[in-house]
Figure 1 (tube, rainbow, N blue to C red):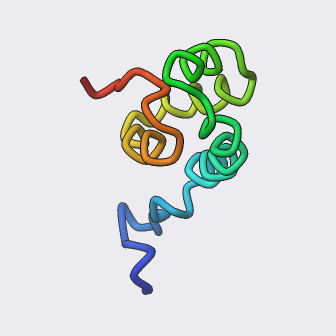
Figure 2: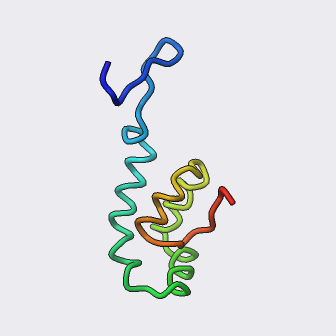
Amino acid sequence: MDKFATKASGGLKMSENENPDHLELMRLLQKAKPLTEPLFPDQRKKWAAESPLAQEISAILVNHPEYYDEIRAHIGEVFANPNA
């Protein structure tokens, strides 16, 4: 068994990096980063409210609040911290 998989309940458990939602999030963040970098904080909030791309990221964040720090590291504090 490699370091990316662990035995759990008689089966293999995907690592965080192999999770389909995490892979999709990484793809979306790669698209979002160049769009959000030149924006001021208030413009980022508007982008988060109006952009379909931001809505996709937000939907993943709802299901995976543990990804908040990673999202923040890529595109800044665009979304409210669901862990707060």
